[in-house]
Length: 211
Image (cartoon, rainbow, N blue to C red; front, top):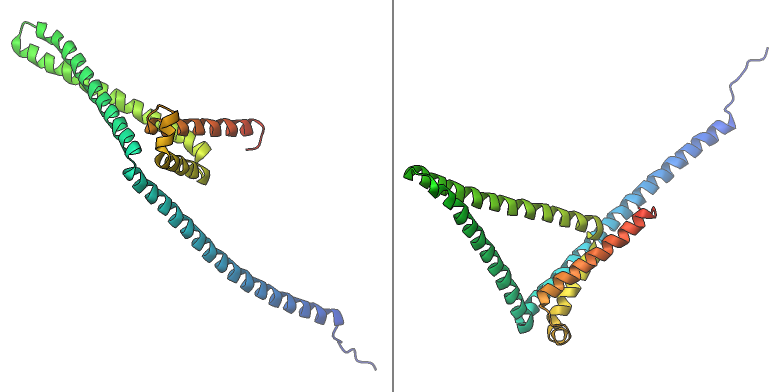
């Protein structure tokens, strides 16, 4: 009488061996990948730190050079004085308008009511003008920020801005010899042209399906 004996099948042993080899290879791969990821993150942090330090050095040296540059400092002072005088003149004009409109309350026969109406109209005009200017400034700032973020929010724009300022600061005398324009105004015009070009180029790319 023959008794059946279960014999191990060769392919089962090979499959177990393959599974063990696969697990070992996977563990080695995971270990190497984790090590490489740590090294990559460390290198990235070092590179970002170096870039930040370089940009900080460029910005600080440019600011110091701008302070020492008589041409740029003079144009900057003139620009600030012009803006401040414009704000003061606008405020004076608004006050004059408020006073002119407030005189309508002086026509009231009752003296107390006339005084109340006069100052009430004056306050309404001043507050209304301040609110209108504030709203316009907020709307303009949001639109400019939106355009800049959508089209120019990258390292290239930072490089362009720093380079423009450095050129104006270091070569302000030569630039003034060819362009009879305030250097600060020139910087603002260059930045506006740059943003317009970037927005136009990106708009063309969007129209062609690149984004």
